Length: 394
Image (cartoon, rainbow, N blue to C red; front, side, top):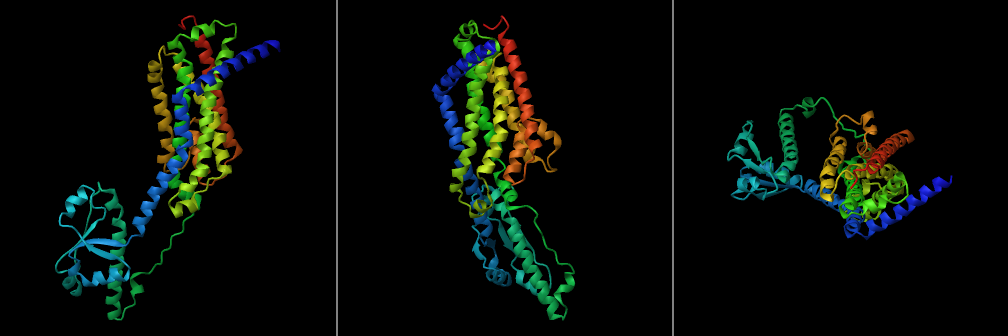
């Protein structure tokens, strides 16, 4: 028992020393503040601005046209639908290609009205550019209003001949959306788990590099290893400091979304987005074990480097893998797979997305990723202890 207390005291001493060094580092403090405190409000502000712009463009009833004077019946229909029509600029094709014009252009033929009166099919072109996202996004709205105009013309022609318009529409189709408001909002906020994961990753990375390769480069690791403290006590203290930095960023990041909701500019997104204390606690239950596992994994990689630059190069692959794993959730169109919960970072991203959708997370789904992270952390800490125990650590 006395030996255990001695080892724990040694680990606590190393922990305090490493944590103080990390907090004195301005780069670490800057990473903590920028990636955690400011990230939540900034991300919500950007997403709500994007959603607000989409809503304004969806609600706008404006058509840009060439030759609308030759189609008074269509112009009258658009006016009855509260649409406004403005003349397209002379160089509208060039402006569409350069994305200067954000609306598709209706091009009408000179004999539009004559063909319509004769029962023919006048050609209406919707000119756009697939490289122009703003213009391409409004094409569907124009197609819809033109289909409504066509239905009205068909109905008028049938009624003139004494035929009920319903003859051409034997079915009445209605759409029912089963997604709850939170799930619909998660389509826009689905990137939040990714940014939280990367904030924790980069926060732990800075501390892990400094406490391992940084000490080797400065020459302070060898004197530390000459102390009578056991290797695993030293590693445990270092890991505790690195994990604490990652967990600190996780806590601040999750809590920053609470006041960040005040910055939502989109009324519909603000009404759908639900993120309170239950969601914040759910995020933390997923992120804290991952922060510990990432800290141990980064230390196991960085301890093999003799300089910080060498350790950064070795850690780049891990950073890339962690950044790519959540993309599986974002791009997955067939639903979550059971094996997703066995992969660190992917499991947390999957479950955080469920939290944003308002789904109930089973305890087993929370426990499995935590156990995987625990096993990964223990394996990596054993690797660090083994590396420090070699005589070649100089």
